[in-house]
Image 1 (cartoon, rainbow, N blue to C red):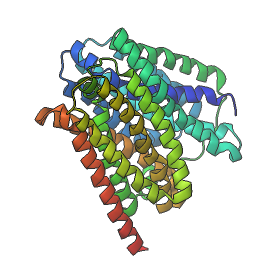
Image 2 (cartoon, helix red, strand yellow; image 1 turned 135 degrees about the horizontal axis):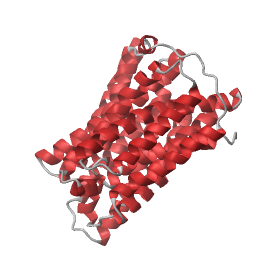
Image 3 (cartoon, rainbow, N blue to C red; image 1 turned 180 degrees about the horizontal axis):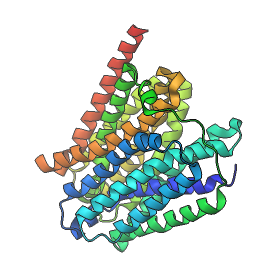
Length: 385
């Protein structure tokens, strides 16, 4: 593997860490900045929606600028925004810095994928791209638990300080290691929109609903697990979730190749719905060693169907529009982050209207709706064909 890829992998790793660590330190942020846990959860919404909008828009606006210069600029803005997040005096300013971090991340990630494809021979591009996306997964598996542990052991601001330091190292590394990289021709936003036929749009809707269900729970996983286990530091559970997510990615890819994307997607949605239901069931038990053990099992299992969805969904989307696969997948990423943002809103609404006990129940129902909707879409597609 080209050694220059490691600096790009480090970039996506730290972006993944920054993205997922917020859930683990949410109660600390709420307490320190004197806001409710629901209000603090909207930081996830701000980041996700800014990423969802920024990815296609900024990518199109900056298509004629030098690739290396954009990578440096986007990571530098990411560094500064996280540095400011560590010292903000109020919740409102933290909200602004999270949006800036999301916009810079939404520009860096697709640029890193484009750069990785240009740094290796065509025969190795698929593997190079998988390494770049694996950086985000590693951020979930290692970065988020480490950042959560630091934030809870010291102060939540140190979690952002960790991200800032690693982002600065990445920025310097890009400047020193990466060569000047020529860009491929990029199509306009209007051309990209042409790939969104009705079947693709409906399938993206399934992705959004399923992601809303998953992140309605994940955004508030810290207070949920605090209630189930009475443990304050949930870094252990996030580590288990990350391990399950890694296996989920592998199982989803294997299942897609062996039994097909649609079957794998349906099985993943069904299992995901059941796992999310279990969070509400666990709140009915008396906290103790039993609930800690059960919560650990659920955290490990949760990531398997949740992340097995990704390769199956993307493979299915490619089959719907094979001639414009890259464009379709860019909208898939936007749909994912839109679902993350809306999930934080829905989860917060459930807590505000009822209690945190019902978040898992609502999440499971939403993923179940996504499963039913996908089954209906499949029948529609077959009839159209």
